[in-house]
Image (cartoon, rainbow, N blue to C red; front, side, top):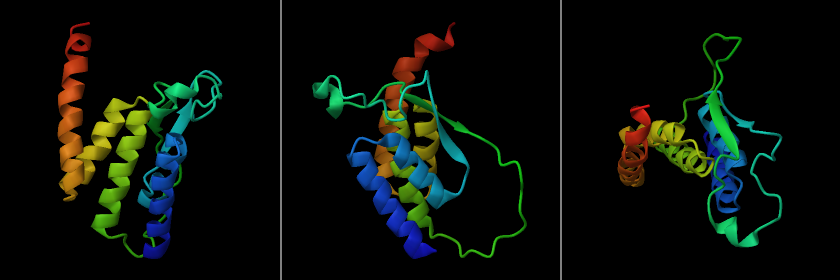
Length: 145
C-alpha cells in the first residue's frame, strides 16, 4: 500500500507539472482516500486546455473546475489496509493544495496546505503562509458584501 501511494504521489507530481491539475487532485485523493473530487464547470474540459492561447499555458487555469468534498454514501467497517505514513500524506495534501489553487479553489487549497503544514511538511508551512497572505488580501472586500 505504501509503495502504491508513493507511485501515485509521483504520478500526481508529473500531472501537476504537465498542467493537468484536475488529474493531480484525483491522484492525491486516491492516496488520501478522502472523497475529494473535481467537478467541471460549464461543459469545459477538466483542465481547461482547448489548445488556444499557448502563451497562457504557463499560468494556472482559473475557474476551469471547482473541487468539492462529496460525502461517501456508503461507509464500510474498519479497513484492513496499512496506514499511509504521515510524511506521504503530508506530501499528498501539499500537492493537492497546489493543484486546487491552479483550479481556482483557494479555500480548498488553504485546507490542504494547512493539513500538510500541521503534519510537519516545511515546504507546506511556507506555502500555507503565502496562501494566507494572498487569500486575506483578496477576500477582505468579499466579506463586506
